[in-house]
Length: 306
Image 1 (cartoon, rainbow, N blue to C red):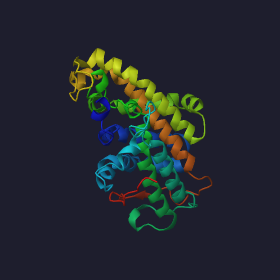
Image 2: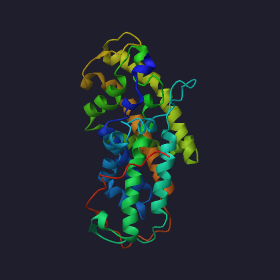
Image 3: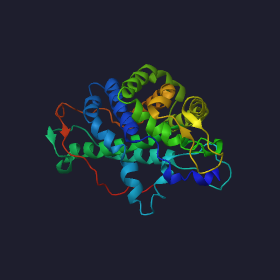
Image 4: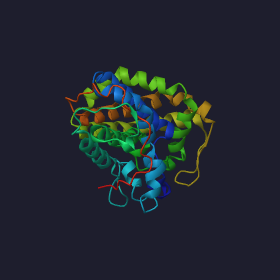
């Protein structure tokens, strides 16, 4: 029953603020790493990247032609799944897909030029950059999903433990209640811990993704303990469809802040590392110091999972 209640298509990781935070923080990390090449361009498009990072939830789930059933599994990977009674998810393959799409758009870029302009009307390298930014932003959604604990566990919403509703409380209500202020802490943590985390996660990109997935699964127990101790006022019947009763997020989420910062910062560090893996070297940015796109690709054709 617990598995049936937690429908995969309903499990969205982070809300719009959380996904925006991961993408914008990643953009600032790239600016730190590549200050004379891609960094400034990525940084000044961080708002656009943050918007693109929410499209898989706000758009793709509604236009996949199957009521979200095609898109849904691309947002999770249940590491503790046993048997064949339920899909394990494919977020790792979705990340690889968008890495390939971004690499394909950006690899030919040699010397983008331009100022404030419409990306839809751009040509040559500027057009490739515009399209590549879309792919990078969407990619940030899935790499952000990897850092959300309940996207790695078959009990996606805590129902087996009587903690129904924890998924959305942690990823949405808590983030909303603690921001503004949360993003600054996420950026500080990402900058402080980036080198150590990347050293631990290893290479190639598949190893990084798998490492963060495993770390997220390990964090489920910590979130559960904090929820039961500080937020839950009445547990639900284990395995039932009912949600546990909780304190308002402004009160119940404060003890979870450190975990939220850690998870979002790891999502941002992972995202920045993935982006940098497909940003080509040797690009001449002298003609693109003021390149800024005035529009966004908000009605794309659905990129079906491969």
